[in-house]
Length: 358
Image: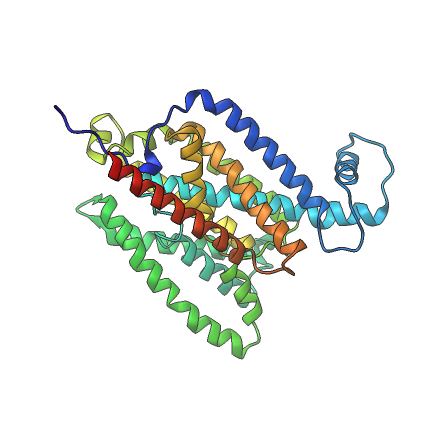
């Protein structure tokens, strides 16, 4: 009698085909609801009801002629809506990056922080802002330095892990931890120099995470990056499915494993750098959201890519609502960590129990 096959809980197959449509329906309804709440709720003394917010948006889109108070219009269209959209896009990008890295590395603990991408992008964005580069390159200087920092970190990881023209997944993960630790060691130095030049608040903005300064320009940039990321991950979905059964098996089935590794690393770098350049480092989104999505619809990456994007968007917008309404603009990274850490511990405990029962 053959021994039972042990599958780690985050990648365990579930009867998900019949769940896909209702799960996606519920996820999109949840996203719509949190976006409406995001533009309706806030610390302002001016009350904005959900219908007022919808009227403002419909009026600007040419779908309604209902008159709206100018103050309400400014609060919704110029402040709250771009902030809510930026939060949704940041959450979607971080969740997609986490899903891609977990599938590539075949490790449920992988996320943009594990391979050093977030650290490199955060340090690059903070350094660019402190040096006054943010306003350059049509206002995309911070994005450029963030992407450059993340790219350098990933390049270092790839170079360390590459042996005889091949990158082992286990070595890649270890190299990411080493490079990430090295990059993070630069932060105390930057904080010391920033303290002397009175730039410490701006540096902390990128190290803790906040979308307080989001605007339409940044939201448009994030939307463009998200479209690229979704297309590239959608095209790589089958390869990622095959990679989860083992690199050798995937290569035998025709997957160009080295090309897949490079593409996933660059895509995750692009997604993380764009998110970090706008919102700073927001933890646990890319780690926890893919686990929740897998438990809802199973391990296939084709439906997982859009689902994690929607769930990541919901998580960050809800966290931003909480800091705006109840927590006096506390950094959003604190809230996502406080929410994400217990959820991830619960997932780990459930996975351990399932493995012991096999």
